[in-house]
Length: 57
Image (cartoon, rainbow, N blue to C red; front, side, top):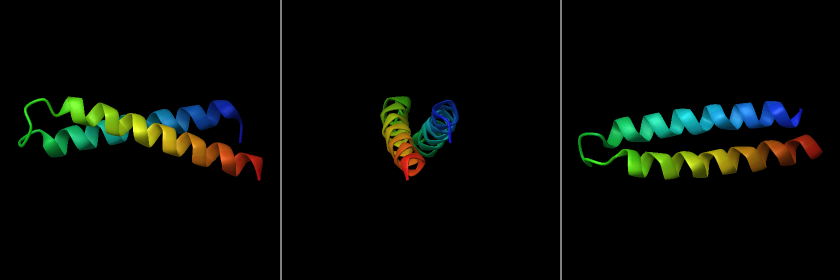
């Protein structure tokens, strides 16, 4: 898999996780985006590293 595909897939994961966490916490926490963005960044990093390691095998 090329590095560009890995970045695009990881960006999609970032967007999905950010939106989902923000929507789930919207009623409970007023600034739910401040929780959603860091969780999206963590998901981006995990998916990027995982896919990059799979590429090298």
